[in-house]
Image (cartoon, rainbow, N blue to C red):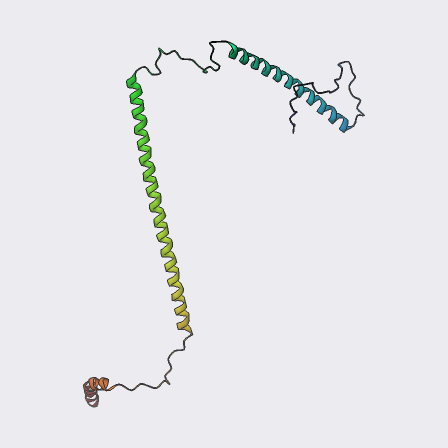
Length: 188
């Protein structure tokens, strides 16, 4: 990665330059020496590029300074100058219709945004209701599973349990039926 060289407006960097008549380095030169030589060459190129860039900047600054010193010249100019006699549009009706189209499109966009927002809110509410129903259903399923487990653990009623004696009211209301039953059984 190339590291930036700090800008030095004073004296240039002191890097020894090779003469064109100087012989090429011998092949016995180590890799580190070749790498160092390549780095020196890239630094020389950067230095020359920076000098050219500095010269352009100084020329540009001098040009700006000379413009600002001239009386009657505005310090800054617009990138393009249009004469006041030309109108940006051929007629005001074209401009008015364009603005009307723009406002209509903007109103349609705003109404679509409102509708989308309302739909999102309705979907969010429906999702919340659905989650609540799921939680309620899960709780009911847990209760049902617990009841089934408890019912499975209870022993069935045994035949050894003593029969309960009917109350006086039950005996009074069931007496006619027992009498009819016994009367029909005796005929057989």
